[in-house]
Length: 244
Image (cartoon, rainbow, N blue to C red; front, top):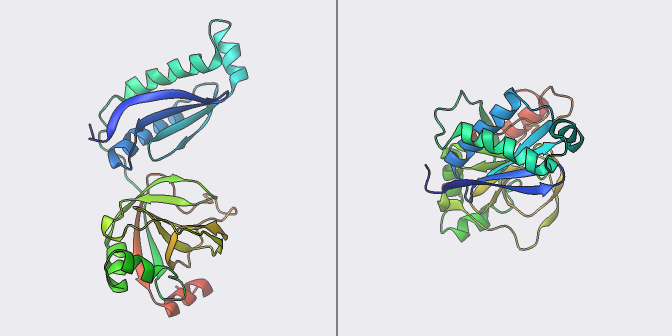
């Protein structure tokens, strides 16, 4: 078991949700256990199951309490009944994560030029590096999509080098453009829509990270592998015009 993994803990989040926690850190082994449980629930869902949402440390399972009441009778509370069923699933996956299935691999082109990387110089100074070194480190990493949240299609990526880790801005910006690539602590991610935000901006991608008209609206999903590739401003504009 990973050093960061621990005995799973289940607790009631609300009248319709149970939280399952596998650990306390950003850890690929914790993600594997989370993903394994999520796949198990999705492949053979309970009648009362609605959906589950992964996080860095575990999974939140949402359920229909009316359907639970119809099944369980008057023996217990809906939350206690659901927790027992989920404990059985947790025991089923055990502590071993095993081999994962094939992951989708997505390469994201990023223009790190000054007009897009508003905080690139700050990230470099904060870590005693040049801007070129920050870009080299950011584009040399392999990133795992742990979860989607905050805004539709916003991906939380783990696997970034500690060498460029930088705290969030003390004063968040009120408007960040869609496609902006940011850093917050040891996380990196891409803003899919124009939103407020406090991550350190180091570049921008011309890719549309979220499109409600696509079959899969979010370009990324939990479990995907991501690489970043540096592009010039000319290439960025060509992407926007659909020439690449």
